[in-house]
Amino acid sequence: MAGTGISIIGSGHTRFGRRPETLEELIVLAAREAVEESAIDPATIDAVFLGHFNSGLVPDGFASSLILQAYPELRFTPAARCENACASGAAALHAGIGQILSGRARTVLVVGAEKMTHRATPDVTRALAGASYQGDPTEAALSFPQVFGLAAQAYAERHGSPLDAMAQIASKNHDNAMANPLAQMHKPMSVAHCATVSDMNPLIAPPLRLTDCSLVSDGAAAVVLTTDAQAAAAPRAASLRAATHVSDLMPMSSRDFIRFEGPARAIAAALDGAGVTLADLDFAEVHDCFTIAELLIYEAMGLAPEGRGADALADGTVLRGGALPVNLSGGLKAKGHPVGATGVSMHALAFRQLTGTAGAMQCPGAGLGLVFNMGGAAVANYASVLAARGA
Image 1 (tube, rainbow, N blue to C red):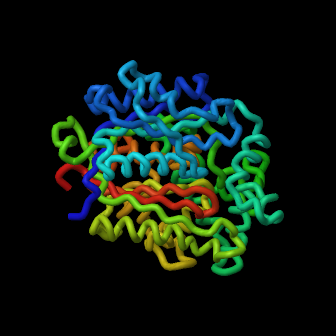
Image 2 (tube, rainbow, N blue to C red; image 1 turned 120 degrees about the vertical axis):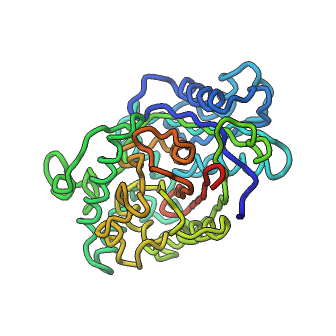
Image 3 (spheres, helix red, strand yellow; image 1 turned 45 degrees about the vertical axis):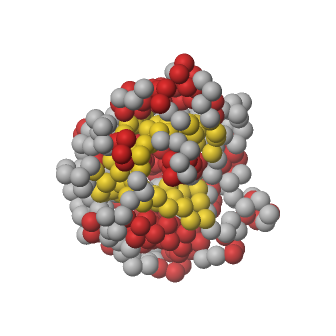
């Protein structure tokens, strides 16, 4: 079967949420856990990459070499920071993949990290909005909740209201997070609660309710990448069967935003590159920055026809125990969304699913998984297919 020739052999992951640690401390915690799990000598790491959006959220703008604080042996190891909005973590992973494929490295440590909760919500909203198109005053003035609120409005006009499906997605992901000790929110929410506008669930950017929005979070995650040949001796390994990156035009006015063409192309290319179909997958971790985004991703994946994403909920496909459970981790909605960490977190938790170490989150017999991480309004799109050893 097709493959990149690269495997993940270790993972690290802090709990997401309001964390007391500094950015440096979070990076070090995740990096050490990943290296220790991989059972490699830190001196054999050839390069390190950091996924970190920042956008003025913390003073540590030049943070890549903070990874070197994890082990004395990492001093003088090449380090670089990767930024691609909410897909900064996946960008760092792809940088590591590229380093190995080029022959310049055999083993790479990738960390994603962000500190967000110490800033006021308006500051975080403004920082994230910098990832939208600044060349159009109308688009530049939109927050990301407003961007995806417009997406939900456009979907309703074209296909009918998505609000019930969005409430089901929110409730599903909160239920899934209850099994994830690393998740920011351990609070089940009924579909009725998520569907009802109230003092506890106010409108944020109509028609988006509070429960339709991902969380402001601190946290870090890490993975160790190496060649398949090196991975054969590792205690645990999951191979990267495919890893694709598709970028689209930034201006939403230049494309049909709710068709999610960039995500669809990235996911299709990853499945094709891995030589598999949706029917072969056992689980997926996808970028539910807002519940409408997860609904649109169902359609981009091909789980349902355009305008029929709700079918994947109605028939149980994306639920725990369904044909393709989506966001068993709780997703960005309940696990949390420390922006630079998200893409690495998805790969770290997919690795744990495929090595049977996901604990209460475990998808029984998981052999193949899909990861989709998105930056901006479906602008930077990264998809990966990962496989268990021997799958």
